[in-house]
Length: 334
Image (tube, rainbow, N blue to C red; front, top):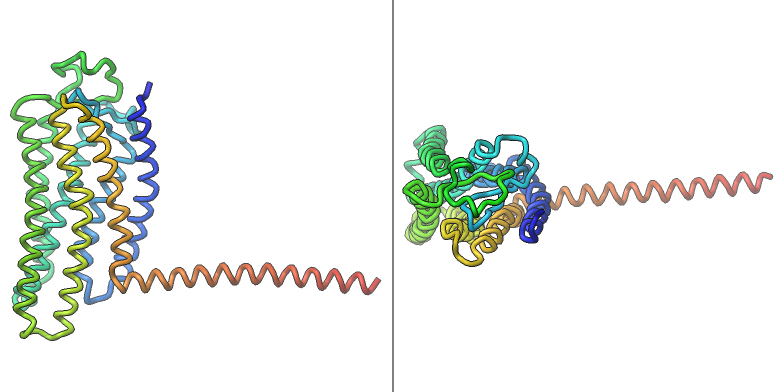
């Protein structure tokens, strides 16, 4: 029988999934289809972060892994919970979820690194072919993804081998991790290091970007400086959302998953996960409202929808008038 926390958690995830997936797909459509040429490379980093975020949301939607402290275990309450062997299926799902989260953090790092390089070394970057930049981003994603693919499965253990059996009276849909040992330390340390690195990089590169903008204001065109400052300001706002609503709650959740015996550790971890899964909705809406090009396209779409609605209503009213007129004509002829 499901406990009240599980009911709250699964209900919150179902509501989150509807809003988040619709919002992100809409935002991705506008970013891909309606980004102006001067923002094209900048938009690729938005797509990168938003794409990984959407993938993580989709995985959580179909799996619904919920922490089961004081056991170092999760239970898959989602659609695929009973479709695969619980140990292997849970291990794959949680590894993929953490992989999307890690790559979101990498995407934030790359976006600020390239924004800094375009401001500080724009004349040099102009001489480099764009595919080298894409190759660099792919390599960074791959290099930092490999440790994640190793440490998470290495930390997991079979439910039958879990050392504290009294903590797991029911084993249906469960998958577990070793509550002690170097594997746990390695996994948690890696995750903390990645997110801390992303946050520090954001702060450092933002400071350097504003510093170089101030130094370069006398040497670059006014419109170029204005565009750079606008894009940087937008990037700071967009990246603050996943840091405040994603990175910080995630580090808190990881901490309390590690400290599984603490009071209310499960409740705190669950609340943090719900916050994390909702940040993508705010990220997508902010992306569309922050930049003038997307706001303009949304306005056009809304005007078209409104015009069609008004046209349909006018047609209905006209049809009713014609019917009344014809009815009156027939009556008068008799």
